[in-house]
Image (cartoon, rainbow, N blue to C red; front, side, top):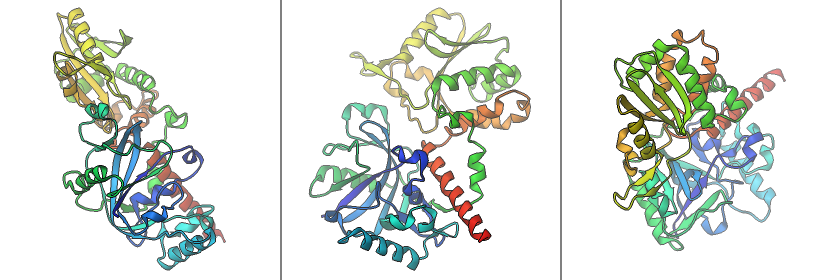
Length: 406
């Protein structure tokens, strides 16, 4: 029997107060080795012993949809179920000490408060590769249209509870073949292992972007972020004119404009004497709609706004945009009038305003604005991972300080 494990990461209320053990999955230890922790307790079932060919590290996007983060292959199994838990822990402690598995020069078993009473490593991976573009696993065929790069699994549905799922060539041969195609698709994976060793200085980098919205858990709120866009765009009209030119690609934009929020449900409508800019802000939400019988594409808010604005402002130059995080994959070709819109990624917005920060620093809340959009500039939604990483590094730094004092 050959088995592939889906290891779902960054899930559960446990992460609110604790460091997820799976944080090590995307780092090398100080010796340059990669170890894999299988959620939720580091254990695998006996039936899978010595049969695991690969592990896919994934995270949940929505019900029935998982995003692929990385793959681990050439595996050496570390955890084996013994007659009692104490034997398992002794094996784990012995393995960590024997191989001197440290991160930031602190033993892995010391980094976690209860490290000597937990399974911390399930596998060692000699080959770990992250994706180089967004790829999704989908169990519900009706959702395939949303995700351009996807693999459809016809057999086993994803568990809503368990954070590890087993797919063997005996039990789920069709799904197993889908996974083999995914694993062997060289266009998806980085050629080299891009994981790095822990850099203890990075804690300051990530803490510097932990703005107020992150503290109150509103960093994904589209209404709040749209209000921030409206506020910032109104503060320095000469800067916004340059933004319109450089990022939106509209030349000769006059600065006698006004910004209207939620007019006819449009997130941002920006109007001057000869132009109208329509902006839809999509952070983690998708574009919903019903399939048109005539075109086969989805009728959605995009076609609705395009028709309404075209009729109302027929005497002006019309420009339609979708602001979206780099990780929010939106395929405009699926929608009626989707070709009338241009996607502007958050990284483009951030890069422009970061470059022009000197012109904006006297504007109240500008720093908070940059912090709010920074976390959406990644190619994958790494919010939970970055927070987990910050806690992991912080704990290492504190343990090193304690050791120096004793």
